[in-house]
Image 1 (tube, one colour):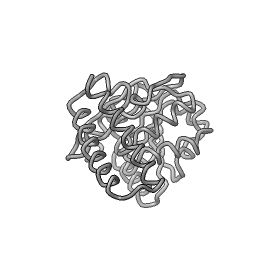
Image 2 (cartoon, helix red, strand yellow):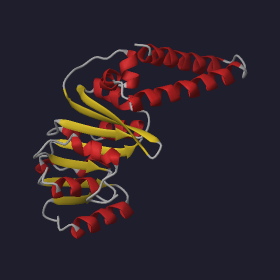
Image 3 (cartoon, one colour):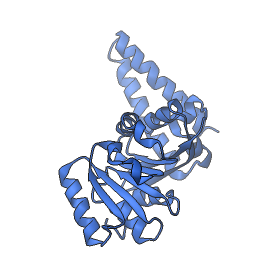
Amino acid sequence: MNSEKLSNRLMAVASFVESGAIVADIGSDHAYLPCFLVNAGKINKAIAGEVVKGPYESAVKNVKKNGLDNAITVRLANGLHAIQEADAVDTVTIAGMGGPLIASILEEGSSQLQTVSRIIAQPNIHALAIRQWAIKNNWKLVDEEIIKEVHKIYEVLVLERGEASYNEAEMLVGPFLAKKRSSVFLEKWERELVEWQRIVQELQQAGESSNILMKKRELETKIDLVRSVLSR
């Protein structure tokens, strides 16, 4: 992967960036995504934020290598604190982290979202945490995508400001993904069902403590929710 050829998951993120957007890519690593977007002519300005010094330095080098110093500003900062008011950022991208971590970054940096109208999140796991954050903070899903790359499955969530409500099944699997019912979506949740059923069987043999019973009930609820979606 480089600035000219993104991974499939980052290409999916890039596809949801609107033309002319001012993007803050949080956890930008090598700044591949903002460099790609500028080189493609899709955007003219971006912020690449990175909290770790090594990836920050890699991003700086890559931006210079692409001759994009005037278009992309690389900042060493924690989460959304890479965004400054004068940037007038309207789109935030956060990719390649767990859902709970992305949700915590959005929560901790919520004051930096004043000018932002679109958030594109690509969690590696537990996308539910992002949906929960969105509902709590008056953001709604406007689209979702699910892709498979090198035997791993990733989800992309696109959020815009607004109120929405979803039932338990939609929160778990994604309302847009449930409607699209792609082959990757079906593979993901059929795989999850097998794993959850295996764990439930192990718990049944592990005793009757309150913690075990609670975990078993949680898994059985998830199994019922996913089965209800897959059986439609």
